[in-house]
Image (cartoon, rainbow, N blue to C red):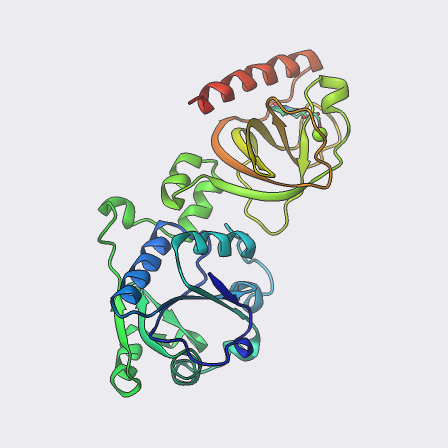
Length: 311
Ligand code: RBF
Ligand code: MG
């Protein structure tokens, strides 16, 4: 997949461009269906399949505060889109100036002029441009004049009751509630966070005999506090493990951490990037009255996670 991170880098229109446009936060199975429709259409006309997205996420530019945390940061989003088989990803730096383009300027100058759009694939509720004034009817009203086709993708290939509810907003709610299996169904993969391993309190290994890798989170959606069965991707390897998200209430420092105890691993990961896939939530955090009770419970969690992740 070729990535263009600025419109200036597109020197000439693509041949028979078939495009879909969106924020695609999460690259969930609804988004994936759009990409497959784009790829199929492009194959039929010997064209180029193109995804257009924006960075930063428009809600971060347009709403100063209160924007929801993201399901996928740009790096993961690009990887997931690449995996669907798209030819090109155009990532437009989202600015106020860009947001003020009228729908017609957007269609005529950018989509048709710069990109060479011959077909656009949209979901049923698609809207775009300044004040969201662009919609499917508006796209269709320019289609003949500018020579492109508008394809409205249905939810054909998905189970009906699931399809009704798939949205980035719904997935954010599920992750926030710790409902990882339901989130996984809509994402088509487990919910993942990525981060660098940072120094923790140096307590897990020394005091409890259960070392953990602490990871810092940027602007990503954090699952509900609690204990989780996880898998961890580090380098080219995948490990199993158990994660704790929260404040370790047994101790008095009230510091929020995300830490993972990785099974069958005894290296040092400080400063390294790891990816943690949240497979299933096991329980809430508990304030124990002494450390040996905490250790006993963590040992049970490890056994539970091993069972959940077996096979
Ligand atoms: N800390 C708590 O205070 N209560 C808990 O219920 C709790 N459960 C944990 C479960 C797992 C699997 C792990 C890895 C850690 C847990 N912790 C809990 C955090 C623990 O106190 C922490 O790892 C050490 O204090 C090191 O920072
Ligand atoms: Mg630690």
